Image 1 (cartoon, rainbow, N blue to C red):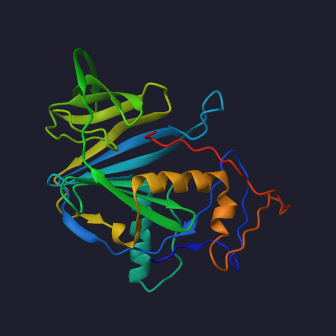
Image 2: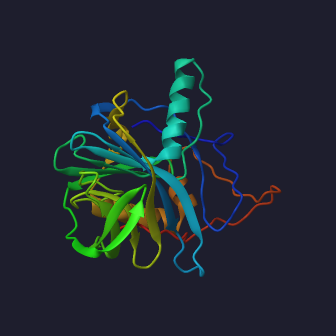
Image 3: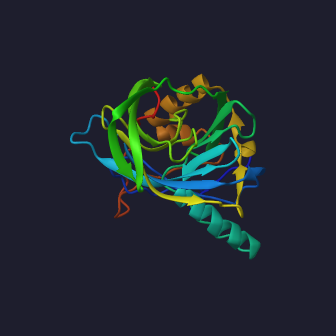
Length: 278
């Protein structure tokens, strides 16, 4: 499995500590598998809370891209898409100064590469993991009388208990797709907005393109280590409990933590994280 190279000198990493431990990795363009042409692209504003114990909530945000083909889809970070596009062009020109990851590094595929499966991709430290699971739509309760307008489309409200959270979604049957952000799919129309009952996650569509025939839906998961979902969640807990300890288990990796002035800081442990599904 190809490894991402850390932005470090002699495999050392300097971090400015904030509320959340983060680091960036240099991203070499990945070769992928063509899963067909893209017919629609939806852009969502994604707001999310990582530390549920901090009140009021501190929200992070990213723009997410939902690419929809023939019964296939890919949901991933728009900033990552832009980074990958720049890196691919730099590689074509023979350069090797690639940009780092976008804000959100996880991705979700539906029916790509296999029909009837979700494939989830994520990165922890320098490791890339994927797991597959059967596509199971939420059981939605539609509220016909609740209506709002999004992107010029009349949207109806639907609710569900799914993956450990209660979700409220707004969908339009004027766009006859059973798609939506993340795993929130299966309504008789496109989901343009969704949020959980605790106010920790919000997806809201801010743009749509149709007939995007010049681009393909590309699966990049072949370079990821395939594990089971339970094993992935266990690895998540281990990583966030001690990110530096996790990273330094790799051969020839040394990590130095400093503040903005170069002063040493203790290793961050028990970092907050909040997964979409519980």
